[in-house]
Amino acid sequence: MSDEARAALDAASAPPIKLVVIGSGERAFEIGNEVVLFRHEKTFYHQPGLVVRVRSDDPRLAELAGRVAGYEVERVGMKLRLDGLAVEHSGGDAAAYAAAVAAVRAAAPGLPLVLMSGDPEALDAALAAGGAAERPLIHAATAADWEAMAALAKKHACPLAIRAEGGDPAALAELSESVRGAGVDDLILDPGTATLPADLAAFTQLRRLALKKGARTLGFPILAVSAAASWQAELARATQAICKYAGIVVIDHLEPGAIYALLTLRQNIYTDPQKPIQVEPKLYEIGVAGPDSPVLITTNFSLTYFSVSGEVEGAGVPAWLLVADSDGQSVLTGWAAGKFDAEKIAKTVKDSGIADKVSHRKLVIPGHVAGLSGEVEEELPGWQVMVGPRDAVDIPSYLRTVWGA
Image 1 (cartoon, rainbow, N blue to C red):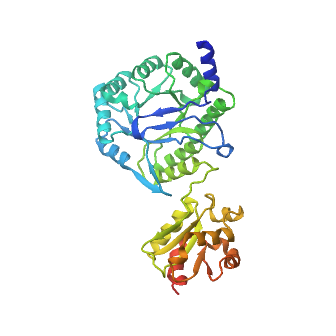
Image 2 (image 1 turned 180 degrees about the horizontal axis):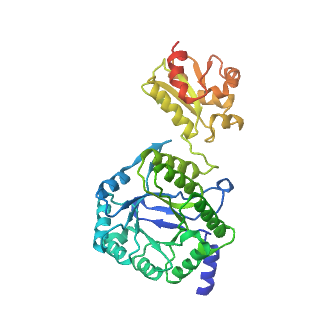
């Protein structure tokens, strides 16, 4: 096969949206390689990177970088973190910008960076000072300076964002073609929009053109600069960007509550709907449980498990928690699908060995499946089936009043 034919075949078989890696090492993140418009059609594969923007002349630069690098929360057994820092050139010459980037790298080692400057000389200085090896994203080439920016990205082997004001796809496509012709293939599209309606229109149009029309010049991840005057307005823009096709979301406000909401939303959107997050089905001991401790049962859907176990632990009552294999479905979904019925509950109890660990024969089932209590007692002769609360938040009160009564 000739080189030309091989290149044509590779291009035809390439994903409609190119996979681009930002950063290097353990904390590098991948974006792109998406194949559907809507999550329920298949799934979304690479969650957007959530990046906090800092100004190069901010006296708190190192402190903010350290806070971003250290931010971490746990949800349903998973560690959620911010993905990077965007260092905006906001004062000083090339040397001052390079020094600011170096300070950020020192305060947040290994954290992927987005270098935001319209000055190729300043970007070159920052990259030449050891930053190129960390593969930061260069932001951004425009119609006015794309040649210098493309040369810079090619020289340092870094991905490059291209920006066209107003979300004009034709302008982005033309710029993309020019930059790719200069030898830079790892591109990120910045539509340059500034409002919620403009964001939605531009991002949707770019995604549709790439997936449905086969527009190779637009087949790249999208960057959303979701900045706004207040963190509430910024949260709205960033929320829409996560739901509607952004590959990188840049925010300005380091508001812990808003960041947690964005991380939680991202986790939900980018969970494969055909493979729910689940925990291992087995017997869990919460606290120092003994022979008189209550026995509760639930499904192995992660959100259900962590909600129930968290409330039991918060109640301060040591307990045994049986987790049945429901293929990762919640209580009601598992019951409706036949994955959490009387037979499954009874089998889980028998196989767990809980009968050898407790002196009583009482089993608490979720309130949403109260109708199964009689069937479960038939499947488990000698056991008393108690109906627990419908919502996990009511478990502490139930354990203190109903169980302990």
